[in-house]
Image (cartoon, rainbow, N blue to C red; front, side, top):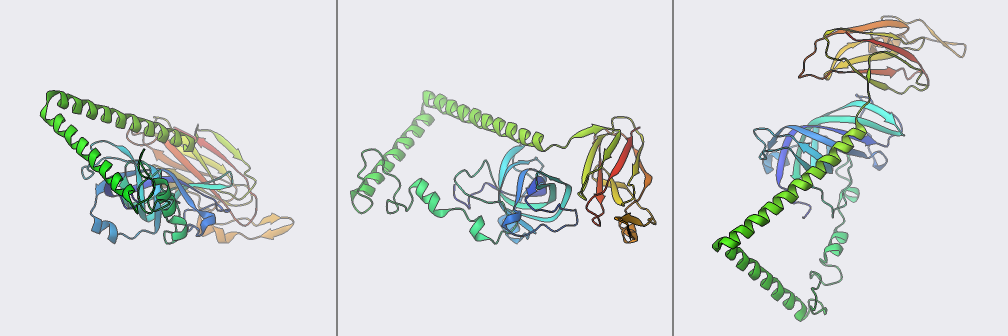
Length: 368
């Protein structure tokens, strides 16, 4: 399959998990860093609100990020998507605009986060196993993003070592394309095409041929189903590895040790009521965000701070007040209404002050 080959052009709402090798953690407001040392690798993703678009609409789309190849993408069906069932696809030359970075974590010297946005992309079924793509946010870097033409030609015998001919078949003249080698190869090709045409005629004109044709179609369909099941298992395994740990409500005492953001996920259960989050940020101010169903439902908002004394030196951190930071003890809360069609997970994110290289906090979650 050539680099330009694709089956569909899709537009939809994209959400995927990615890692980047940058040294400092990303925040929601951060810009994605440039350069090969900060490559973004998208591990998996889902496209919702999918619709098939025209070549013109795809060409006119402008994305803030571009990726040559993203594997293991589930495209959920909609009235405007041509397939009847959800499938696992590969995106090629994907353009993502209006993107947001959420759920940022820093693990094993890598930043792990979620990217959301509108995607315009070419779609193929399965992976390009013979191409050498690199996921990179800089789509203009042709040196890193272009697939290896010479390797492809060498693997398939096009233009390398045989003057442009395909590899020789058994008993073919190996003298190259300058003499009878290519003519003999063309004769074999015509013979195979004629044989396939005769088999097709037999399959259409005889009962036995019709049964044989049906048997082949059933075998092909079963093989595709098996491949899809294996791809689904692989995707589920990848999802399990990146799934966040959900813990019951209770107390968290996390000294942290560094000014790195932390996220905690809690299970609220199936009982409606008021959720209370008691916190103690101690002397160094930190910001606490309470997020439910993708929305910020409460956030710390102190109006003044006591001076912070570190190494016998007094620091005034009042500049953090407009940013929603808090010092000492406090409480956040929101009304939780259980709905079977909505998630029961609560995300609490702590963003430390960058003024000092360490801080600590205590959280106590009270569920209904």
